[in-house]
Amino acid sequence: MALGKGERPGPRVGNRSSRILGGPGGGRSLAIAAVSTIVFFGGLALIVVNSPGWPEVQDKFFYWPEFRESLPDIADAFLLNVKLFLAAEVFILVLALFLAVLRGLPGPTLFPLRLLSAAYTDVFRGIPTILLIYLLGFGVPALAIEGVPRSEFFWGGVGLVLVYSAYVAEVYRAGIESVHPSQEAAARSLGLTRLQALRHVIVPQAVRRVIPPLLNDFIGLQKDTALVGLLGLVEAFKQSQIESAGSFNFTPYLATAALFLLLTIPMTRLTDWLIARNRRRELARP
Amino acid sequence: MKRLALLAVLALAPFAGCGGDNGDEAAAPTTTEAATCDKGQLQLVSAGKLTIGTDNPAFGPWFGGGTPKGSKWEFNDPSTGEGFESAVAYAVADKLGFAKPEVVWVVVPFNNSFRPGPKKFDFDINQISVTAERDRAVDFSDSYYDVNQALVALKGTPIANAKSRDDLKPYRLGSQIGTTSLAYINDTIQPEKDARVSDTSNDVVAALNAKQIDGIVVDLPTAFFLVGAEEVKNGTVVGQFPNAGGAQEHFGMLFEERNPLRDCVNTALAELKDDGTLEQIQQEWLSEKASAPVLE
Image 1 (cartoon, each protein chain N blue to C red):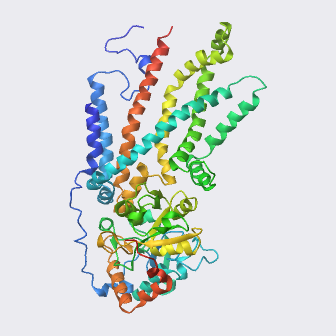
Image 2 (image 1 turned 120 degrees about the vertical axis):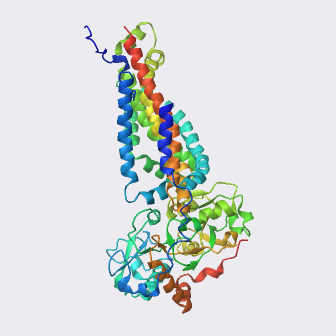
């Protein structure tokens, strides 16, 4: 197709998609984008700032001295969230892969294992995380069984691992099922056992494909660590509640939100970048 | 990078102008004349009615009398007039000229009592301790109860033998979120282990019963209530604490900022103190105040 004068080539397929500043274009479209952005957000800001309750809201939600004062304590408590999601993520990735592999086992003899895996996913994906954490954190220690941990951190972590491994198992399963059956056939024909084929051929391809959705769930996990505050652990959200109740001001919640964003936004950008890279690679293949 | 910088500026913009011009407490109108306390001239949430807020469930000994059939309240219905805070509220209402049926109770969770915007109550009475920081956001009445914090533990556990605040250092304590009890643990007792901070008072009690914590810090009347009503099984009030920093902690009723009703309530409270009514109500509902050893 010949391009006429002044026409630019259409967007290349490989570059489409998840980038925010999408599309081609020189300075002109950038300028339009800038003006449109300023008009949109500026208008929104004007509406908020001119609302009758704004002075009150500004004083209660955007009170700088309170922000400054509460941020160090909240940041301190936020370390607990970080520790928790790092610890939980390790167990989630392992347990979920195990569940996904179980679910994919062939043959009638192994039906009970498939059933078990499916039931696990159904149950733990179906229970609200907040409920599960509450039930575990308050219920199990109350049994007073010798040797069973009473730590809130432990039970909060267990709750998160149970729920998120159910989600992540489904992600893995989708990845495994997306690998063409011919891959396994080829591997078996080379003399690999079923397990070896899984280990060396199927799973590596599957995992590579599902890295973006895995990161997605990881971000979800980061935010859900706030739920363990329910058990009495002082994590970031809990700390902001404490600060807020002490001063009857809501600015500490904003400080907490900022901390979470500081962590999740780079992750989101990374996910976007990975998705774009994967697309490029797959399209580059003959 | 420029875009990021712009975003950062936008994100911080709402803080602009939050400097220090918020010391409006000093400027709060105190010029209200006694004449405006006439029942007919009061500005009320609901005309002709005194609307009072408190949290649901309404716990003893602050509220009592159980729940009549069809009541939406848990444990106690404030409109029974029983329990310390209910009795105080009705005594104040009486001084302001409201008969019992003209008092309306509404459910106000603690966190909602201080959120910005118009309030749905004329005042809130919910064991809220008055602090200077909190006073910035709302207005408080004068004290209707001077309160001390206390320690509840299980009988026979090591902590139950504590004689001083220093004896408590090695233990794990718990309290309800947002309370001055929690502040007392963190700022004054300063135990070696992090406090367990529960969302509800029921959760604190559950943690002690499950031995996840060694003791609960809570105000003294509630401490006696928890033990007396067997909320804490086999519990004991180990002792009460002297106030932190020498200032007497007290409960106040909570008003929307600059609500002129506050001054009328203060006048009523002063009368109730002078004629001994407040003391009498306290005797009736919180009689055990003196009987706990002090943990210096």
